[in-house]
Amino acid sequence: MKKVWLITGCSTGFGRELASFVLAEGYNAAVAARDTADVNDIVSRYEQTAIAVKLDVTKPEDIKDAVKKTVEKFGRIDVLVNNAGIGYFAAIEESENAAIRKMFEVNVFGLAGMIQETLPVLRAQKSGHIVNIASIGGLVGYPGVGFYNATKFAVDGLSEALAKETAPLGIKVTI
Image 1 (cartoon, rainbow, N blue to C red):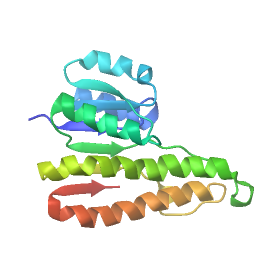
Image 2 (cartoon, rainbow, N blue to C red):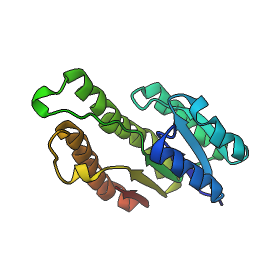
Image 3 (cartoon, one colour):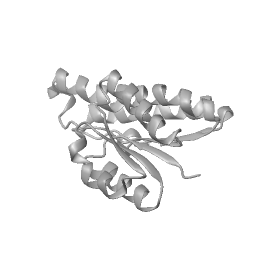
C-alpha cells in the first residue's frame, strides 16, 4: 500500500520541493496551500496520486476540510508534514504585536490544530508519522528573531511531549 502524505505550506520552498519529491517517488499526497492555484502545476502531473487542498492553518474550518478531503480521496493519512510557517525579523523591543501574534497563529497554533485534527485518523489506523518542521532557532535564540525563536522552541517542546504521548499508539513524531 502506498503511503499517504499530507503536506502543509506547499506553495513555495521546502513544502513545494517535498511534495514534488514525494509524488515523484510514487507516494500519494495531499498538497496543501492557501491558494491551490499555487500548487496545481505539481498536482496536475500526478492526477491519480495527488490532490490540491486549500489550507490556511489559521482557519479551523480549512484544517478540518483538508484532513477530510485527504481521507476521502486516499482512505488514510500516513504522514503529516507540518511545514507551513512564517518568519518575522525584528528586535524583541521593536516587534509589533500584530505580527508576533500572526506568527504564533501560523507556526504554533496552526501546527497544533493540524495535529489535533489528524491524530484521530492516525489513532484509528494504529500508525502514522507526524513531521514538524522546526529550526535551529528552536534550539538556540538569536538576536533579531527572538519571537520567531519562541515559536520554534514551542514547536520543539510540543513535539517532544507529543512523541511520548503517541509512541504507545504506534504514531511517530519527528522534529
